[in-house]
Figure 1 (cartoon, rainbow, N blue to C red):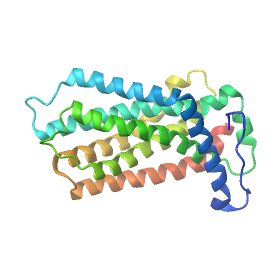
Figure 2 (figure 1 turned 30 degrees about the vertical axis):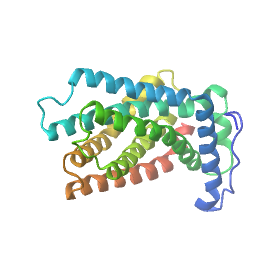
Figure 3 (figure 1 turned 30 degrees about the horizontal axis):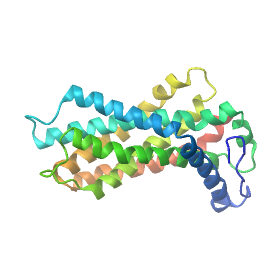
Length: 248
């Protein structure tokens, strides 16, 4: 299915179950397009890798640093790269539809517009998770936070990464819909989204650094719980406000 082909929508009055086909169809279309062209995936991966490389050269390795300082540096670098990559990836979520002239067709299709947002969110989330799966171990090794003498709690980090990336995708996808019709959308999207992403960045960095330094602790539970609550609130609020964003 190309960008010019609107997805089949479920009945408008069937509630969440009736909207599920629309959500899945939009997500599948975007994921197939991303897999076929690979431009968004390559752009986000290159951008994340470039940020990690620059920060790695600027901050150096772990020489003379305590394990806690090394964990903080690695966590900060990884999540900085992922936050910037999320803005790059979400920029293309609606730009492809806009360039193909099919965005209006999608918004005129039967059913609530919130289903379109959820589909676009899943389309952004998939490639971003792939980038995170590469950026996280690369960043940890680059900054000396992983190695033979530094066991890494990968399962706990995977949960934290999933919640953090979901928060990035939820916010940037919503603001991508607002800026898609603007000339300066490449500059406006980060300016609008990054203030909202501050809680996600702080909680993700804190949870990751604590996991690297000492494993799962009650403080990690607090940060992960906050991340989950933020993600849920952002997705619900963005789904409700999305019709006004695309019609504005």
